Amino acid sequence: MTEMDIYDIIKAPVITEKTVELGKKYRKYVFKVEKSATKGQIKQAIEELFKVKVERVNTANYKGKLRRRGLLRGYKSDWKKAIVTLKEGYSIDFEHR
View 1 (tube, rainbow, N blue to C red):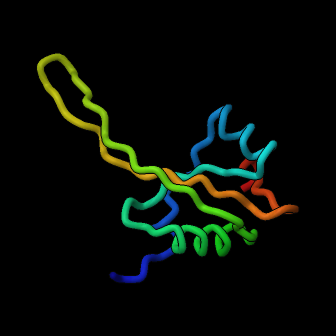
View 2: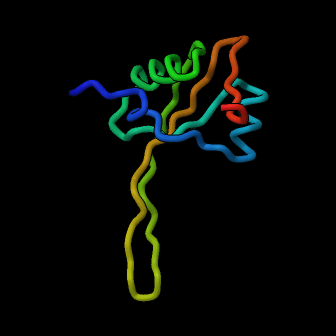
């Protein structure tokens, strides 16, 4: 397997009301990541990108949903979500990035 760049691994943060509360209460942050990325690669990318220490990484794979426009049918892309728990004393501030 080839080595991926940290910007290839972390695609985007998932910012919703629920994920913002997770960050405030439990130091958990949610990211959309590359489907082939491992937990170790995700941990390393988050630590390099945001200069924080990661305690745990949980991942979930999602199948693309069926979407229709009239007679046309298609599927959205499959994607992978990573929930990253930071060590005590660390946080990520998306508002000032």
